[in-house]
Image (cartoon, rainbow, N blue to C red; front, side, top):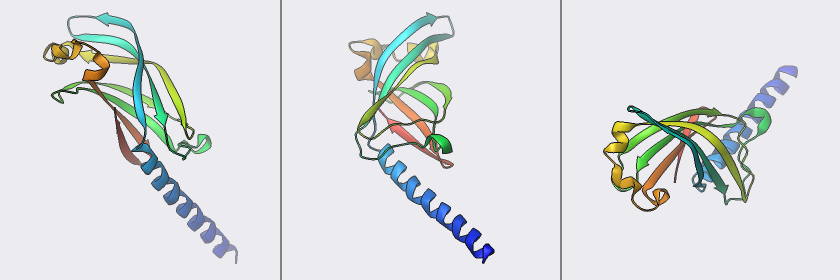
Length: 152
């Protein structure tokens, strides 16, 4: 009897995790991202460093993230030129316990970012006009061992 109860609990936890995984996967496709600020801009001959702040909006009815289980984590932020899809650089982060409530916005502030100057120089057109319109940002999330990408 005890053995059946333990097996039942493990099976129940597995089913719960599978359902939660599917909901998170569907909700991640609906998220939107917007740059809210760039600060501490420093340039050298090899790289441009700055702190990036951005907001992620969850328009769905699904609360994303469970604080106690560390279900969702942000691993990388990749930058591209939106017009030619040229790679600019990556910010490696490890934010866990990310919670994005349903119909709400999460602000992530001051993410240290460094982009190689050679990538920026080959994409100078990126800085003509509004950089937000020309910059493509991909957020790399991980949930239950699977990776998802949010494109802004």
